[in-house]
Length: 127
Image 1: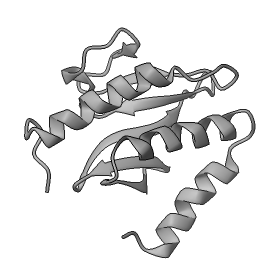
Image 2: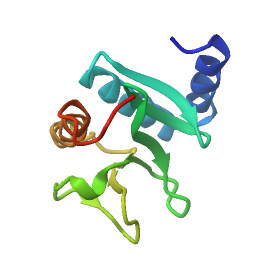
Image 3: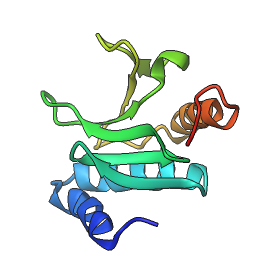
């Protein structure tokens, strides 16, 4: 269980966002939290970070240029999905979403499930 002030910090991240990003980030958060009951949420590098057994697997981030939200998949290099972009990152990949359109929930769930399977299978060691 996280200390109360950490949960307040996480909550404040969402409250500080302007619409439509606030609603989008909250929906993104809900999707990640539903994917597995053992996923915990913390604030890391100023953004929500989702952790499985002590290891970060996903962040909610926003593009500095467009200000649009995206999922940052920590072990993205091991994931293969047409919606994932690596850009010039070596390890991580992102899944962009539009705050003004319906989220591609099925695609997001496939990516999240694939990422978590890396941890559950032992491919990525957990603590």
